[in-house]
Length: 343
Image (tube, rainbow, N blue to C red):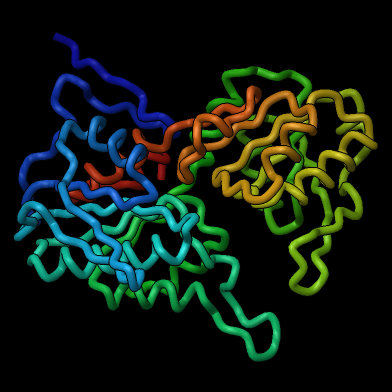
């Protein structure tokens, strides 16, 4: 009988489905998966993909706001994966994550793997002003000191942040997941637009994969202001006028940058505008801003949970669970993760 295979979403890899996804016990014991408060739904999806039960723990918050974690089952000698995104309430979730790592370490887990679909403070990755911290490095230090042995994350704001960690990790990307979705649409007159100069290199990967030309929206952020000013679009007008445009970025917070970018593209005659990004932070009036732009479609992922009542009618939320489950399985079995992306 020919083996049955299925494509792992967001990759070029096809896995064998004639065998169970659940890994055999390895040098670190069996896989145990725990969910932080910010990632309960995503963690359950990952557990379903792996065919394993969720790890059990309880959390209490005392009147003095101190967080207390108690594991409800032993993790001694096991390969433990803790899933927690650094999202609102941000510092509460960060402290919960660190305390859970400590609890796992003190219960003698064989290996502690921190899965952080979205990592906060990654924009603070250098001293670009006098007398400021490098908070991304501080975050890496805290994760290591708490006791994590490995980390997994998706679309770091800057790749060099990997160098802040002294523990091994897998810095994944949702690029394949998002771009495969756009490929299926087979849009013939598509142009890719980078939301800013900093994302231009990654936007080039989008353009190459989709076989589309690239333009870049140039913006300027004044000092530490949260508001950005879009100045111009770098690229020939005929690459935009009367064409469908895919605007790409890594994350959207307030939507201010996207609003200005869409305005600049429409001024140059863009027809249908699509928006694709990995992390849907979407704070303040972001939902109202995006909802009022008249975008053809908004494509994002569930690295950050979006309440169902806030999902816009034209928003498609792709699940990162199959990708994370496959990476967890490969890490547990000591197999290549790069193979998933043809590396």
